Length: 330
Image 1 (cartoon, helix red, strand yellow):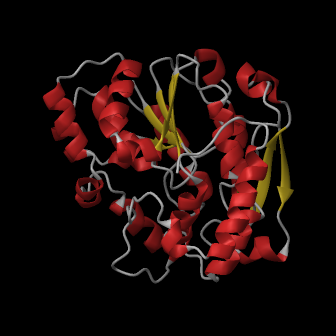
Image 2: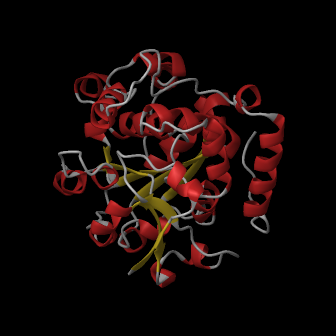
């Protein structure tokens, strides 16, 4: 079903971390059961860099039972995932803030493949998804080709959030150090991004797969940048997608709840529990000041990346987007 290519270059080895283990490229051998929009794209569906342990669960995830009333939140890492999860759960659950405060987001919207990525984690997150009470909210960073094949037959609701790669890279470099325990140089990590040898990369083909099916009625494609600039409009689109109706006052309160300043302090939704878990598993020295939700800004790459690297990244983005017709928001 899948082909696994071990990443053995010096650069790939330099960005491997003990908590995840050796890295491999995972490719789907037969993409014929993917949505027609993705099959007609000018380039093949995205492969993904994951850890070698993933192969033990790849078929299990691919054959996972999907239900029509599921809601799947799919993104590349550091592309507004947590933000989107909280927004979708509240809109889909009648703005039940009380329940949201009592049950952590990691339990309300389970990260499907987490146990495969962190082999020492003592819970089976795939089984947790299978046992969830319906309607289920499920989070994944996997590309289209590695997700359950029933998604394209059962057609549950799928929400995809895209983010400009330049800001994603900036955020992911901090995340990879503090969450995964990466001890190498920032320059090595940034070069590894350009060579597509970092966990969950490449990001751009991952995004294009879902952009090509954005007009499917069960797919909502949104941008991190539009959530930052006009959350009210995003909430309107999302309500229409879910078939939900709320008053302007209710949506205003939700917009305030979803503001970065409020989310960052909300321990039920800011992934602080995940940060503590990863710190304990990886046994790395994490600065007390580091937070999973760090800045949440547009354009932060201008302050943190060199002009030379931004030029390289621009060329990388242009190459990946060639002939697609898609542009990331700035």
